[in-house]
Amino acid sequence: MSASNATATSISHSERRTLQRFLGLYAFLALLILILGSTIYYKLQKDLMLQTKRLELEEYSKELIDGLKLLHIYFDRYRTYPRNPLYRSAIYDADSVRIFSTLDDPEGVQLDKVIYTTGRVIQYIHVLDSYYLGAKYVVVEIDDDRKWFVQTWKNILLYGGALLALFLTAGLVLVRLFLAPMRHAIRLLDRFIKDTTHELNTPVNAILTNIEMIDTEHLDEKTTKKIKRIEIGARTISNIYQDLTYLILHHKIASQNREVDMSHLVQERIDYFKILGESKKIEFETDIQPGVKLYIDEGKAARLVDNLLSNAIKYNRRGGEIFVRLRPGELLVQDTGIGMDQSAIKDVFKRYKRFDTSVGGFGIGLNIVAMIAKEYNLHIDIRSKKEKGSEVYVRW
Image (cartoon, rainbow, N blue to C red):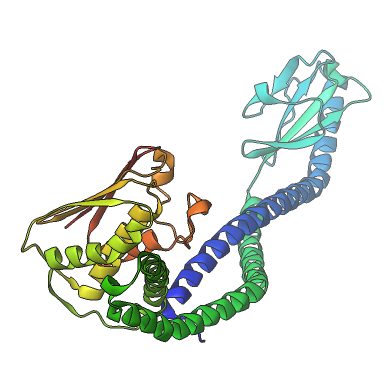
């Protein structure tokens, strides 16, 4: 794969988020389907069990009705309600008033149904044609052994789990198929960026080197201004090149960490960016304490400072100011630019996030700052007010 490790990491994160969102929605819909299917299956199994039990309970009810008929005819001789250890029963009159019962819970009988479960028992209701002993309804009850219930849930969990795994596997395959064209396009874009940045390096360095060799003191004002504009453009391209190179190669290049003189580095980077600031009439004010050290890769420290200064220039107003303060453990870059709302600050470190498309750029500068800060456990704090400017604190 020709794409860089850095960009590949970004792609994998994007793919992971896409996979998580798609699979989350897919799993939710699959669960809904499985729950619906399980509910229907459960109801069918319950109905099947009740139909099987109904045959048994109808036989019991016939036996009970025969007993009630004999008791009705020979009531003067036999006064004992018919009983059987295989079932419990009850009789109700036409007004649903209980006449006699051996049920566990005679209050919960539903005379408007034929067969149903309640609690852990099954009840069957038979309507009499002839009212023996004044009874219209005969209720027969047996215990529900719940074997059907246990077996039904075993099947639901076993087959439902297998189907869910199958659905998720199919979803994973589908989303990878959908991502393949996007992944291919991003790889092509990465290769293009890598090749472009590589080709930019030599001509940009050649321009800057030759500009620095020009003695502007002996040139007329118009020519000097033209050379300044060329230098500003070349330095802008150079800064973009450095950012793109960092994104492409920072995982491949081992960090050369050492005690870096941040006082010298910050002043050097300010001197470099003053020329860019001059194009917008921006004044730099500094308060740099000498001898401030930080254990870091010097190139990464330069990228961090460069992007803070570049953003302060880019989002500053014409004729604005930039204040840079360096103390042991803290770097502050403050500008008098357009600022931003508090709601936007939380997204400021996202890659390719731009809050003002009119000022140009790719939206990668503060993302690079965040990457370096995370690597070296630096703490970034941004305070900003709309139309008032921004303050960026880097603490270690």
